[in-house]
Length: 211
Image 1: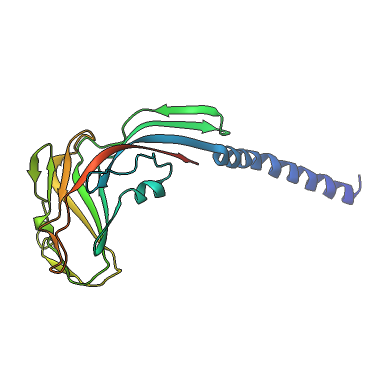
Image 2: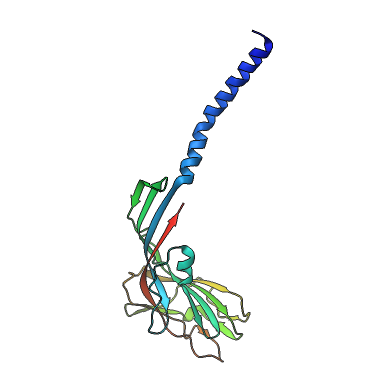
């Protein structure tokens, strides 16, 4: 056997060994890329007035986020509660073959109620006092529990800028069937505009796919 033949055989063997070592990597990438799932549940959608939020079920996180926005005179609000639950989660492989089913609600039993606010003034002159935010759950009024130094009033005097706040309350996560009312009337004020109306919440379903 010539030296050229020996070298050729060795190279072929090395290539074969490399190929088989890469097979698990290729298969992992293929199956991970072909794995997907469908999940859904319920969340509290905010609204003002009597009409209520739109009844359509959001099918993406973006659509759900849009349903948590409110347009009011002089400002835009983004309001969400952390009581969203998941009622199902189906994982599939190759977009067809079931892999797992999870019916847990995805919540931590020890988690406490929290209100997330995004406030975007469209006019100057707004003042926000977090300590004066109130929320009632089935008629029980609650005040936020604010760490020292974080409850001071502040001016929201930059129209177009979004100011974010997370307000914790010493209460269990409310049921989505509870009567929940958020009162910002005394907390968020502009002397040239009427008080912010009461914000109510209605249970809506959500669903989304993922990969």
